[in-house]
Length: 432
Ligand SMILES: [Zn+2]
Ligand SMILES: [Zn+2]
Image 1 (cartoon, rainbow, N blue to C red):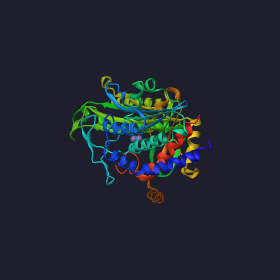
Image 2: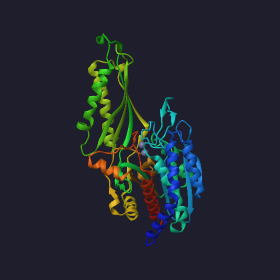
Image 3: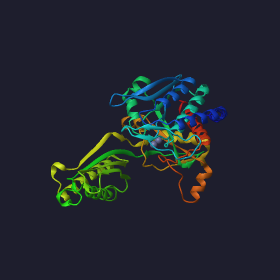
Image 4: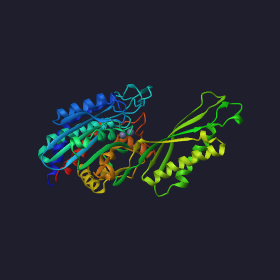
């Protein structure tokens, strides 16, 4: 283990030469974001860079349930006997019109799955993750004498739709490319300044479940509500009722969230519509909390319909989408300890923050397989300009976060810290 300080120095000097090129790659990716399921350019760019760095690369890995091919990338670098380490980046962007005003801001528009024309933005920073992977891949290929084992770099599509990791595993990822002994990933954040990282041991991100609810009524003229059953009033009651699931039904020691993010009903002010449709997202850290949420939604929907006197054949429809469900992201405590000590070695203890579990969700945990068979760790990469971060903090404010049109990672120091920490972690894990 005494080699590690020397290794880190080599990484830093190699990276100094690489940095301008990596920043160009980052800005190019940022200006050319692609929606989930559409990552053709992004995956080809990553594949080409990893091939140039000496990796054996396979593209188009992944199959979606409808049979379509995913844009997954797998890059292997074999370096003698030793552990097999999976490092993952995600590839996709979000349907958001970018409003950062940066010179390299995205102007891209694309069609979403519903055929609507939408703006596209790397508002979750997956472009930071891809560029960090390219820098890490180069650094590790240049330092093959410092580690042994096999590197398995994964470019995963469709993280935002939570079906990319699943698609790659369904396409026999591990049967074709080998089963890793451990898997690591990073995600950028607005909650830490660039130059710092955060890590959690145990549950790190909650599980997510997608649910649709359709409240069915009986439509009619807006002037004669007495002749129908108004689904808008029932939907309003239902949403208020939902607020008691977390506050009155859940175990208060087990955090959970129920959010109605989307509601649609009606076409005109004087028409009572036939139905009201809602899209919900649920978050939970345990199966028990998740079941309480789903039961609570079913009971509340049924309850408002019964109290409004809706006939049984118009009962509400509650649909739980198992294909849009993300598991809890669980950081294996033993692996988290090893990764954390390498982060401390790379940056110094002050720059490594012990993070609380978050209510966001990820599909990275799926690479750990059922029952966390393969240990996984995801750590947070600070991405905010330190001066702006400090100024915001002094006013009690937060800088714009993930999934917002003003999310703005500061490229140079974020990428430097990303490559430095990921490379150091990989070197530490590829020693025995
Ligand atoms: Zn995201
Ligand atoms: Zn993300």
